[in-house]
Length: 576
Image (cartoon, rainbow, N blue to C red; front, top):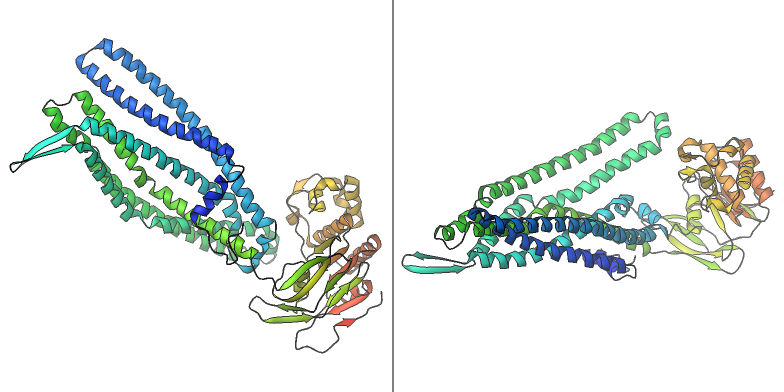
């Protein structure tokens, strides 16, 4: 999802247009044709029903049963046809919503997850609540787009049709003012439009703040929900810190923002409804009848005509009132569109971030780096790492002061840190696996969590049980098919042992361990490193660690220093 190198926000039109020219939209075009047929057919039935209503009234006034009976039957038939058309419209609109949402979600999901944009957006602080924009905002934006679009089409057809009907029924209003004879053909049409223009003006000026408030509502609701999720996912750590009161205060503060915004929306919506509905009740209910009364009293039209005029007037003003009544929906749609525009901008920005540390593939079997300069996002220099060559089967220990950039150097090798300069050349066919201090363990079956990032069917149950047993997790070997929140259920040490079991299963050519045994005791750490070297003798092991005991398992040591630190050489050798 690329807009341009500058990462400009797309226009709202650019959020909508791509789907309708894609090769997946043909089904939706058929559904659109069905919905348009419903819209035109529905208006036709409404016009027909208006005529039948007038005929019913005239027949009742005349007490003409022979004329009344067939008209009533026809009216019932029109009503049944309307029910069938409404059901068809519902099914078609929901299928259209589903097709469009599936395509749009896939598009944003690919842009967000496929090339690491999710990480870069969070690292750079480009956007908040990206997950909500993907799971909720897209669905609501599409729903509101369809509601407004087909609403406008239906309204336009209705306005044109009932303008013609009302113009014909109104006839010409003639009167004399100070000796001037005035004739106004189709006068009821002018009254209807004037009535609705006033209603829309009242709605706009009493409710225009809703656009800003509804946009802010999405943000404060998402922030409140995110804090609750953080409390749930980090419950144990927070409990150890006795941080419940602090979390309550933060949640209460963010909920206060939700309440404050909610109250503002209620007040603004209530104010808009008061002025709009007062005008409708005070004026709208009597205008059509009073306007038709002069011609009825002189005998120019029948009571049935008055009924038809009132119905046509109400149908026309109801269609025109769509723009007034849809004001809130339009405000929500605009707010959602702005959030998706920001999402698109963040994805494009992440895609085009400058990458001064180049990561590329080469046909060899070694990892080679030029001198790499590590910097912070603001340009401040962190460290300079000399050129490096890591062969398969070698074991490197990366040392240095806390905060010097050891973990950042691993991120640079993984292509996740663009700040600085230099080149990293990775072997084209060799696999790499990175074990951070706390590895990600997805929700689901334990086997799926163990096999991550591969699919669980890549490894047999026996292979998985054996890997768990070798990594001191044999007591979990019998629950491979149990679904749970393993990230929360496993202790820190168990999570790190599970990460080692993943390595044993995947057998990568290069293993990077970033404080990956910090939660283990010395005996368990030694056993896992011995197992790693025994099971993967041809794999390179690169470790970031502070414990001196790990030097035993590495034959090379790289010391990363600050630019002004010349106390020791960047290289030394340990005895394996």
